[in-house]
Length: 454
Image (tube, rainbow, N blue to C red; front, side, top):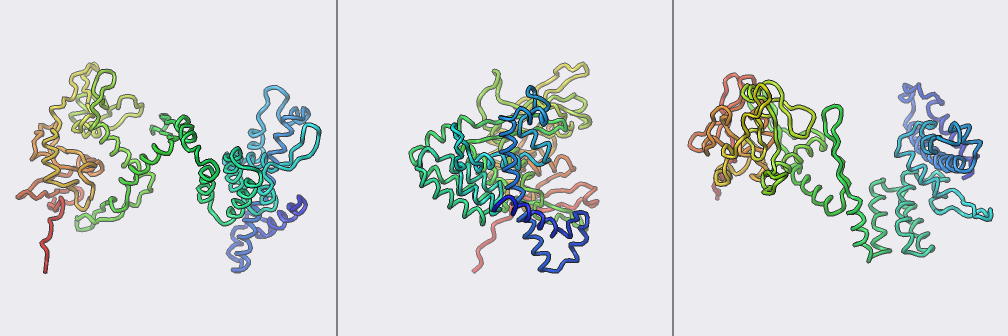
């Protein structure tokens, strides 16, 4: 397709957008079914045409910045200290970084080249160029194809590469971006079967985890993981976020809890999963850090720890936490409260004697079988040994004063004012008055095994 035809198609597509007026969105409802479907097709065509122009424009801006001093002076404010071509295009087009990267990568791949002798050479990726300029595929799909073919360019001849590229271009029209990425990733296995180990070592060398505390109090963890680490990470998260493991509750008018699906986004549920995984790792870590056992220190004034009012701080984290959260952490293994007096002197470090022993945990596992909260399926390995009467309120670290709870329900138990008692070994949760004024006990724990009925 020529540039003239591109321009004509663009004008036609814009005219089809409800008479070319983008502020007349109410007119969409007046379109017939056929007109509306045609409009959707035109929008897709327009997006692909814009991508084609975007790729060509990105390539041309790069060429002019590199070779045209007059252009640099006019567009960048001079030869020295000017912005890069990508920054200029971002400012002019107001597009996102992902779109900009695609345009630049595709533009470099589809623009005809010039030899040192001035001879015009074909583009590096002719099949991609034909598809992009013909408005058949988007720039994001074209970028995936270019990256995949370039990755194996040193391991195949030109004919094989052209065939693979043409095949990927053909698939690009019917696959999602994610599906196309997965397909392109199989190319090294085909063209360089003996190179898996060097590729893996390269990915290991490029892997990294960065930690940054944000102004709003959150901490951002960015992980670029090699395949083995990524596999372990995703498997662990999936194991903790499987739908059959997710149980949430909502109070019914009669005061009882009704089991519902956890409707939070998967991204939020993964935070709970990651927290559980990290707690378990600390619980089983027998190593040392700076000469002391691996612990997370929580600094809290003594009066705040006793009353639950005020704030506390986790060592190494700027954002404070509620003192009530620190009280809950004070009952957990390897999460040590540092209690401060009025002059911020250290009064006491939480002692391991306040924690349930391994023998007590094993007894709880045998007794409770997992989280005691109704219908919660969290297994023992996901659970914490919770004090039913807080250790800071003279609650004994005895088996009868403990129960297994997952992190989420342990937090709810302490925060919302629940209680638990046992009758003939059967646990019953007692709701707080705000939820049930009568505080009627509710059956908790694992359901008993039913006898086989003939």
